Length: 315
Image 1 (cartoon, helix red, strand yellow):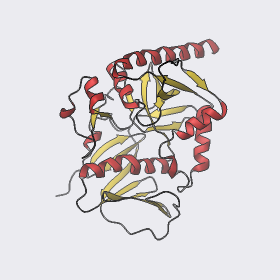
Image 2 (cartoon, one colour):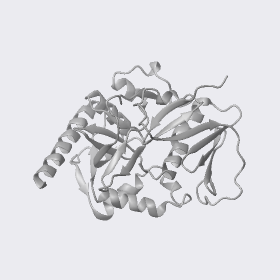
Image 3 (cartoon, one colour):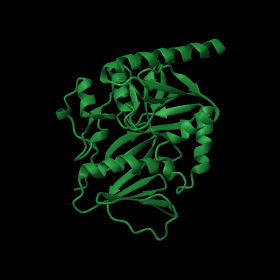
Image 4 (tube, helix red, strand yellow):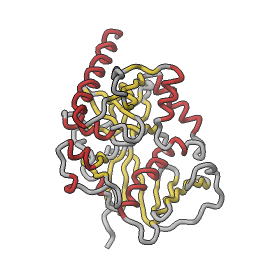
């Protein structure tokens, strides 16, 4: 008997796969007419030649990219239309899915021309606001508090962007889950033991996001770069300009190390420039501790309202 494939919407395409991906259950309905990307399990030939110099585990062989994660799997990503998964013997299924929905899906999205930020994004008054920053800056926990305050979470960790006909950046809904450390999940009122871990050996758990009211892309209004404020420093949100804004955008791109072997360095620079032509990039230092996240949400809400007011005044 032939199994019925699962369809999962992701960004502006639909993943069709025989592999069940519980991380994607509960996503918005697929867009009518969206491109179908196939995920299948099986072997594939080794790369004949590698042009992926300088990036461990990545080989570019004509129209395909082979990503090798030792003791987990090999992934063949072809023309932005297919991912073939070849698990290593004895590999954890959860670990295979972790890299499938991370680096492999990232490569496919880059092949499809998406601009990817290593960021979360939430919806405030019909517009998307993204926040990036180094690992541990609190991106996912902040998104969880935005959800708690009634805002839709568009994406966690990977923010997929296209530019419309007017050059405006629009954010597509991504994977409908937040990856949170146990203590962060508890601070949000969740029981970590009631949710799946990201993978064996990881203390992060996966908390579902509500995306039912998100039916399509949302225009991006601002990008905030989170960092840790020193105890005696002000926590003002300040705009970055010029080289600093460009550097922050490029540094917070998702899997930026893949751009060169994939031949996308010029396209990436163009995407960053196009983004800065339409939105502001802001440094947003924040206090530490779980007791201040509600205040952080309110601070960004006020800043977002101020941006909207200023835009109305200029129009």
